[in-house]
Image 1 (cartoon, rainbow, N blue to C red):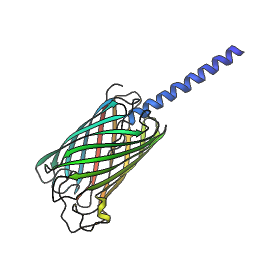
Image 2: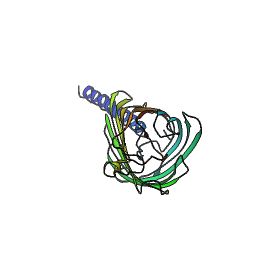
Image 3: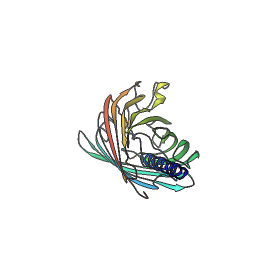
Image 4: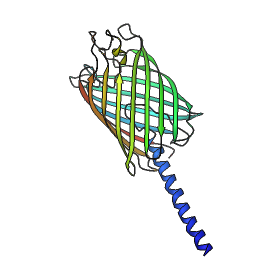
Length: 272
């Protein structure tokens, strides 16, 4: 009788352990790039490197070109060890009214809270450089935050950018947040919200035209132990405030007029 009970206990324990490992792996894969409008950090428990392709389409989403049309972006993200994450991307935009332009960006982020395990809170700080659609360079800093659990995840960014152009704001401030909950198996769904040029709430002469907001549904699919993951998000983009200053074509994920955008990302994970 004792042998039978011991065997049953061993079977139940092993099944529970395997299920937990599967769920942990599933979350690890999904956590490489779960959100479309926020950059998250990697950990030692996630695939160390991943490549992703992002395609988006928008109407009135970045003025005269770029995101006001078709945007295609290729990016790489890697875990360097010691809680450091590196992220870089290059994009090309095909405007609705014709013409093409490009942009590039690179940054490095370090987690100062958490960062060793997938589950639990993480808080990081990073710095980077970019060149926008108009060829204007900028430096920026990013604060990343996330909390991951077995069936849900929460993440977001605070971005502070200084462009090397007299026609731009002294400092641009952008914030983003996303929430996902497990629907079934490898499917997570939720919502993402982004606020751009939020200094427009207190600066009437905000140089980019005013504060803009996006909020929309978000979906992430990352099968357990799979090398490929998929995310999609989209929604209306609108001005929360207006200024009398005409907006520029700085790197933006949002619109310079009320409009909409839809974005999808395909991720390929290495070291899986």
